[in-house]
Image (cartoon, rainbow, N blue to C red; front, side):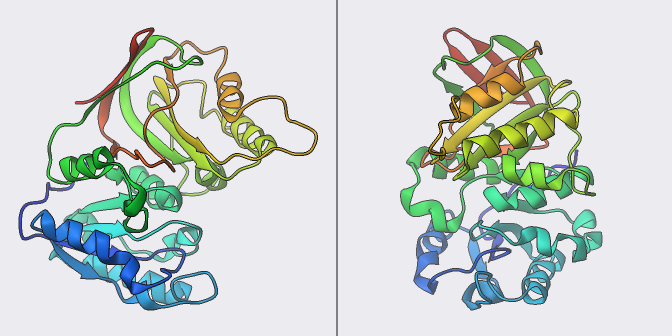
Length: 299
């Protein structure tokens, strides 16, 4: 798995909108100032000020903007402004020829799982981390972990245990992201191979029965039975019907992963939560889950 070069002072970082529109230019001020405080040069994409219904410009405009940043050798990282929906509408039109010759970090989460998964399939690490429009609510740890990852510093997390955890130790490539996106990519060229890997999952704003449907789909596609470990992050703002489903989102995932012997960690600080720690997808990691807590070491 190819690791893009670590950033250094003076490097250019593009901010682009691949999916939903940015409400106002001032919403990017925190991100611009944060990059400058790290000695980096923000480069703003052309679609950040555009709107086409809920999208940041038309599919063609968002595709052209991202393609230009992928092709520009001066851009050392691409930071997606926000999620929502829309990246899957442009991914098949992207040309990664120049990116492959000069890789750079792709940064984001949620809908950006499309790019994470697609690039994982062609052999490149990406960065699952906070985005510009999430910064206002993010913890200092979330921001610091993004800087650490971009500048090539080692990542290591130790967190408390959770009731549904399953003890054990596993080692493998870290893959995954948003459950809804992974579910939607099944059967496509961007669907990830999870065999012998550590799978990370998170999601937001889903009905519990649909979480069950998605997890069963992942299970039936063989994405849960040959893992080296499972990490479950934020399961945020879930919904139920008037007739209760009867299980929490965490319990649904635990049930889907039952019958397997790999370690499982819940309540990991990543996803649609304030403390959204950076994860290097595609990196080799060691996951250790025991009654005292969980450790995730990037190797």
